Length: 98
Image (tube, rainbow, N blue to C red; front, side, top):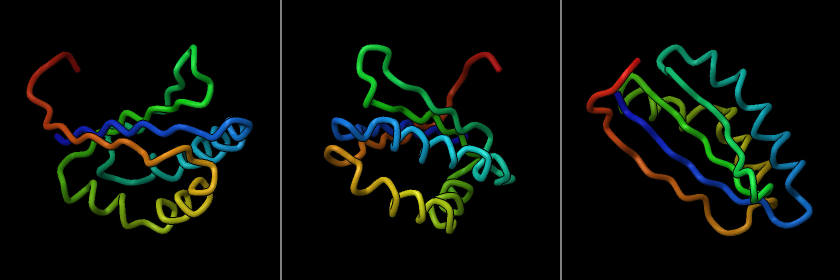
């Protein structure tokens, strides 16, 4: 399994617009067969800081996700809303409770 942690920050005053765009992505990603989890979080003390926890069956599934039209469309929408670049970290799942 491949796990991706993506942290995105909205510019001040753009938090709601960013959240709406990120939320709209979820049903589209849930339809991807090899995507196991795609969960949006917001920092409780930083309303403009968002985190996606993503889990894919393998790297090929992540590559497919990254090349979908809805993924490309999302970054077209949120690009102007971002404060800085997204921070993306990739992990390999080793063990844990399911």
